[in-house]
Length: 296
Image (cartoon, rainbow, N blue to C red; front, side, top):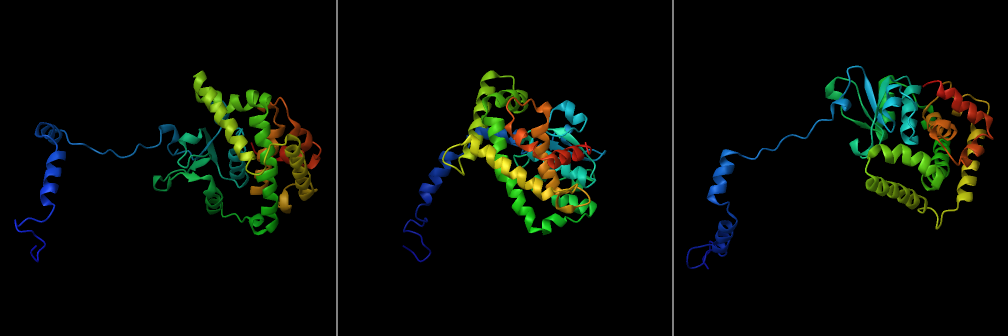
């Protein structure tokens, strides 16, 4: 072995094997000539569909809804979408809504917003950044975010009421057929096999979500906890028009409205609606929902 790392033949050890490997994987000459004439081209990623492109008329919020309701900017039938749809209206931001689904979202979840032109600022805004974006647009102050009670009462919505909602919508057989399947499954495809698979996936996802916090699903307990949550919210609201004594509705009002409106909305097609029975016990929450519905 020489100081330069070569053997007595003058070749670097392993270079013969490497040369053979290159020859083995080399592109045959006839094929190479074809690719030389027609080189591979990497095209840029597709833009959003035209219906999703930024509109010169303003901002566009992509939510779960149907085409007819989208044209009239009616409330979404999905609580998460409705929460942000309502909030943007409350703070005075103008926008149109677009019927969409999770597959069309850059983050895999709705809602998301495409801001108006200029195009240099038309990056899709996910729900996690909507409040920050809205505050920058209208320079509003969110006093409720400074209040520790916000997080405490928000947990009532995110856990107790949401869990009862998941059961009522997806795991109650009659409601699933008349509401969830009609709104989420049937519009996605006309194939009966695919519809059955999607329906099963939705129900399984709801079941797994509920079982994260309990060993088994107790319907009575879920409904009772939602009832306690409504009572707590009613006490918090009191005689005020909006939560936390605000002069105008804010994010927490939108969060509550997202559930109370859909629970009380007869257009949803509920067959079993125990949550509405609990909610109607609190007149101020019902009035709060009616008051906010005027924004639509």
